[in-house]
Length: 199
Image (cartoon, rainbow, N blue to C red; front, top):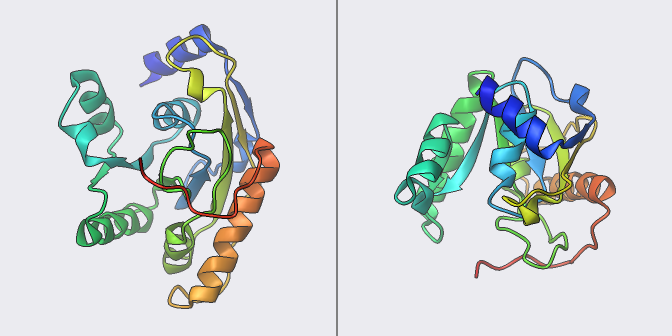
């Protein structure tokens, strides 16, 4: 991974801001906007600790390089539209956090195809509230142009502490909105007050 980080840094020369907000140790949720498949490549390459993401199950079935990457980074496969599988994936995320790991999630649920920031789904708040861990917001720009050489910016914000009970829908919604507000402030994206749909 060290060599990949070096090559990525030399080729793309990403601008990384606020990396000090990501704790070097201990459980944390990293929540970001989602512009590209490559977001889950960029974040693990700029953060100096392992970050485990949810990834579409299809990524583990096709494309040798893609399969290798997601297995190497410990990504958790999830099948879209399968509620029991989604719940099992969140349980796996809790295991990662219980072990003191960093877990990455995109609250929008799927990539933004028009570059706008959509309403966040409340799984991010459920994870943070259930595990009792901070959420570090992150905004990516330029990743939609990858793998072509592009100007990439990765901007981390100050950790957020969600409050309330995980079973309280209002608390989850409020905490999720707080996370999305922080991401929007970092990214400067236009907001969309509805959920993004899976194509």
